[in-house]
Length: 392
Image (tube, rainbow, N blue to C red; front, side, top):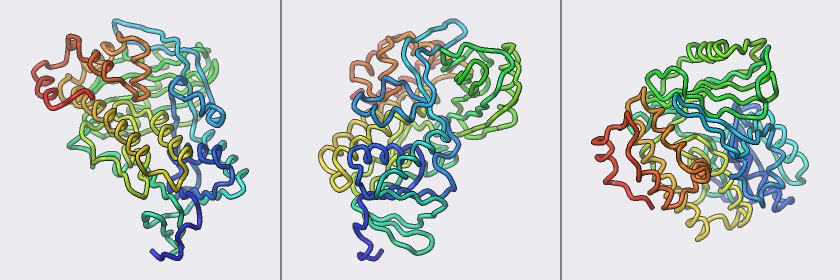
């Protein structure tokens, strides 16, 4: 690309999803006059997603600008297994892609030197410039490639399990408890995977209900899973007045990385760059840590010793999450995988929160394995997996 295009801007973000949005919001909070361009190939930001997170994973110093993203909040959440039900008194929150797009678009519109380009295709990304489909070249001190996974299904077959889901946002004819989120109802029939239903009550009569599978293959029969969501509600005497929205997804749960985090420009971020939680799909805490780093150091000084330290820690955490995935998908019987998670929810609450935030300590990691394996996990298969791993 032509050198003439260089350093026209401070920051160019490619991809209009969660990672780019958090970087934009964090950087504009730190430097309101930042010359920022966000480029999205679609006609709207955020896609069709619901991002959920434990509110305790949001650092206090980020809450000022992060708070507007919280669309719904519950003071507690519940998990259910055939022989265990637990309520955890920790705040849980969520943000729909529609709400995310509104908050981000408004912030970009108010920033004097920020620019949003929708329906714009980027065909080449370099260390300090991008080329658009129309031939335009744009340069910046920092380019962020946050275009999502390289391949969300077939490319991961040999090194990954898959989290698959169909979610329906529904209007109900009968009320449910709007104060408690149901993160995991694993009392449902298990198929070829660990299956659970996830219920987020947005009001007494409106909820997002997702049927989720941790499965060996990426195939998703949306019609069949949609029918199971409706059957779940019917079985609990919660008749549906209307289906307001549907979302679905197939996310890799890898036990091997596609490679180390890239430590030279451009900044490859989000799922594409390894900045996600491989064992849960919860992306907010990890994406937020990277966004706060860019905001603190500035686009021109993002890379360096502090970034290497952040990347080292993410790789350590990811290493352990890969181990958990390998044990789950290779050593556990599919219809008994729920016992692994039931086992996990017997651990202390603070460890559970650190697991979801991907901030486990070395002691946490050891503690998770200093117990008898749950029924359904092959001890011999587990022993073949564990020797090659260290709990750093």
